[in-house]
Amino acid sequence: MTDPAGATSCLKTPDTSPYSSETSGVRTGAPRFKHSGWALIVIATAQLMVMLDLTIVNIALPAMQRELGFSVTSLSWVVNAYVLAFGGLLLLGGRTGDLFGRRRMFTVGVSLFMVASLAGGLATSQLMLIAARSLQGLGAAIASPTALSLIATAFPDGPSRHRALAVYAAMSGAGGALGLLLGGLLVDVASWRWVLFVNVPIGLAVVVATPFVLPRGSGKRGRLDLPGALSASSGTALLVYGLERAPEYGWANLVSLAVFACAAVLFVVFVMVETRSAMALLPLRFLRHRNRLGGYTIMFLLGGSMLSLLYFLTQFLQDVLHYSPIVTGVAYLPIPIVIGSAGFVVSKHAGRLGVRRFLIAGPALVSSGLLLLSRVGSHTGYAEIFVPLVLVGLGMGLSFVPLTLNAVAGVRQGDSGLASGLINTSQTIGGSLGLAALVTVAATVTRDHLLHALGAVNHGAVSQTLSTSIHGYESAFLGGSLASAIAVIIATVALGPSTASAPQDST
Image (cartoon, rainbow, N blue to C red; front, top):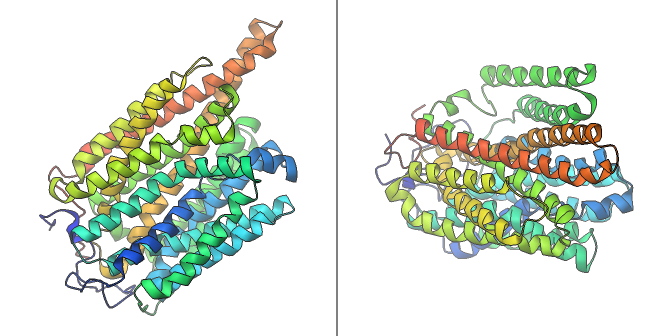
């Protein structure tokens, strides 16, 4: 049955899962944790740090390329190594908290993230930097879902938990845009290494504070589904690699076809493993609820739209409008400001109004903003960019809190790590695959327009390069707008009209 009060049913049902975790402080009647305010600061800081690193290195990529000698192709793996490790291992990271204790694994994840950041900042070779970024992704995959699960431990059911979830969702939504601002500032005043070094003092403060402000918990015996994690993450990595190489080498190229075939085989293996395993990483029964599955799909589509926006608009601002890194970061300020403001407002009304209304309006605004951005040109002023950024920020702000509430509402206590891991997985995998797909679209459109320009006008044809690049950006923004429009359709069709949260598990 759906909780009539809305999303306040989060994690209320008694635990009967073999993955059960903390046994104290999670149930509805649990007393308020005396350090809940400080606990929220620690959890929010860790989540912000994790989400910042999805984008903070983007502005530093040219400096990294110059110093370490990356090629155009290999440079993309500085971003992909983090995104793929983060998204591909999030489910495994969430399950570690259920099995071994959330506070313990939260500390492990933040510590690994901090050490990997230090190693990345000290990198003297391409391989060392990419390896460090992969380890950062692993640390983030452990820290992020356990942080969300800890909210259920530190905050009692009701308005206080809604406010805490609003803060968590705001950090998730605004972190990417804030990363661009901070990255531009650090590159301008220091060096690219500080986009990684900055995580060290933040991570150290979180690790030191954790034992004092986060509630202790215990885990339950069980095992990790390593075959499932490896097949899913490897399949995703191969799919992204195939999408990125296809425009250059051709979709019918033998290697491209082999990569896509291997990715498909790995995904089939993942489904087979999850079907037969008693300790499945993603039990298929977990996706039987229409509202929950719909919410994950919406987050997947919005993740692709958002990461693609940040990636392509950053290039447009710097390469076409000739903004400096710091000015580019400042240009993004409307997104985190509007996301944070809208998120707090939504958190006060989501329980009463339900998530469906917000998840129709939010993606619709994102789609509208991206559609407006698809009209950019070489003479575009910031005023023409500001309005779409506000629309996108408002749409994301309306979406992130309801999606987070929908993800963790009604799940068994022992499945909270799985629920929180899957919502983050949807966002990051959606971002990775969406970005790869739209990069492919943009590259194909740019190449086709350039070949047409070269064929039509040989004299001065080089001057057509900027124009063709803009066509590529336009197509990418249109693709992101389409993805968000599909999210609107899913919210309209898949979510129940009176549903405030996902139904409670009975399986």
